[in-house]
Length: 253
Ligand SMILES: NC(=O)c1ccc[n+]([C@@H]2O[C@H](COP(=O)([O-])OP(=O)(O)OC[C@H]3O[C@@H](n4cnc5c(N)ncnc54)[C@H](O)[C@@H]3O)[C@@H](O)[C@H]2O)c1
Image 1 (tube, rainbow, N blue to C red):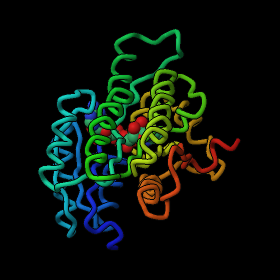
Image 2 (cartoon, helix red, strand yellow):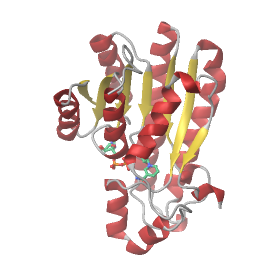
Image 3 (tube, helix red, strand yellow):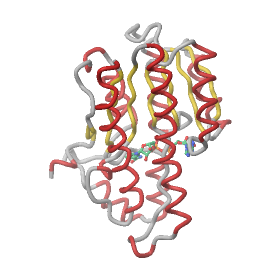
């Protein structure tokens, strides 16, 4: 436990599992009051309760990020509970894709874009209003290495993560003088349920994905959490508009 973020309030979407859960726990270990949010209420409540059981401060607020009204209520609920919003980690996202571009269908396109793109947009709009009212804050969005280059058989997902980086950079420029920093993390392949689901559906693709990292392994959620906490810290005060690969060197090849 450290007190680095004592008195600060951190919101994590997709906080019930994987990268989101690990990051919510890391914020709490470093003194922040945490709002865990997810569409999966049972797992989200469980995450918040696990944080409280280890001495941290956390509440759970259910929210499907693709639904604007629910996101508005999430931010209102955060302000009602803790009075402010210092750090927002917009991390909820889905993959759901197993074919080349010409094999894609419109339902899959809409679902991925609704959650990965419109969801981040909804969150940023409401978070920025809250941060403007209090004089600043930090936003970190989860993009992906798939937002920096090609992702074979995941073209819709790749396009959605490119869009997340577009929002990140534009908002960083728009709100830089207002004390709001906005960055993205771009994970390589990380050992979460998302990766395990993909591996089960297409073991060849999973083997390819695992082999893209020069460090010779896939990543852990804790390694993304560490990058998110750094981007929220005072040490990153001059860092904004960045799409930071945390990818074992994958994008350097
Ligand atoms: N795992 C990887 O290899 C990897 C790599 C690059 C980027 N990412 C990105 O990291 C983020 C987290 O992924 P993960 O691997 O931890 O996935 P995960 O599937 O383990 O967890 C995602 C969480 O998001 C929640 N979620 C899904 N749809 C939601 C919605 N509409 N509203 C609110 N919550 C919702 C899920 O319930 C789940 O708890 C995603 O944005 C993903 O695209 C993952």
